[in-house]
Length: 446
Image (cartoon, rainbow, N blue to C red; front, side):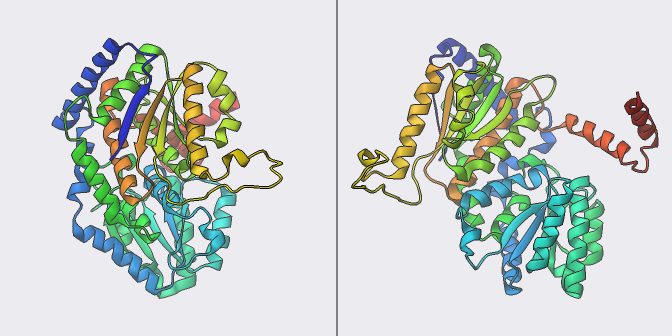
């Protein structure tokens, strides 16, 4: 379902070098399939699509139907990193761009919290909850990660104050199977719970209840999402140099290691994929950015960003390559009309679809950027729907495992994430951090 075209890189690399990196990527593929590489206790995502039980899908749909019976029109999803980005990506991609302005009924608005510590954002969330019929999905393995824990304490109090004895029916926890603060609270309060598998890291969790439940609550078909992922799982199980994930991993590592291209820009010409870029940045940034190695992930939406970053991409430092996610067919049709005065000089486009103009802008950009020294890979799907989203989620996850092993790093840990937390805890004077608090205050006073 996911296709790849690496022709936009051919003028930048030698065929012999590419073949060499294909062999490296195939060796990494073997490590991933044998499950004997670094981080191999976090490979539960590999067969999630094909092994997701019907009971889990039905349980997500049951929460959806129960909250519909309560006329809930606002769901607050609390989580950070992989605990919200996949769901946010899918909901943004599948929703009408102006759904809130149109006030379409039938499904609740899904908003996200616990991904920042902004007091203004939190206060404005409270304003929203006061006006709406609210429920909450809280996602955390431990229940003690600062950002989501702070948000949940505040959202939980609001729901308890407003809905009283019905509060526990309006809170669902996605957490560890047997341990942690959130699991303990869920048992005490009688929350419905879903399990985050121990062998699936957060950034690989979109096809677990972490992603499936919010996507279902937003009114989208998680069965079709899983069906697309299953097709992609089967397609990528073939060991060959034509495997799209192998080709992607081989070319991006070649561009990085041999051509000095240390920045990868994920490009889409469809604004519905803004959060695909955000999800992808976390997936590849946390998986590969370690041991002083890694390709820096960035993302843009063209043609919009061609009018802001286009100059830099075209003529700036030659340290980047682009990976363009192409949507081959639009789900809607708009034809440009004719105007008798033609003051805007657009009558030459009369009768053409807006998407035709978008496609020509994409082709023109490709030629210009390649001529300007920017290699370009192209990943394509048929159209944006649940099935193709499931496929592209799985494609990028599988390719990430191959690419990181090709690079020589553990794809499934994130040791660098802890550094800011330790400093933050010391500055907040968290119990148990007294020595660190003292040391960091002395450092800041110098």
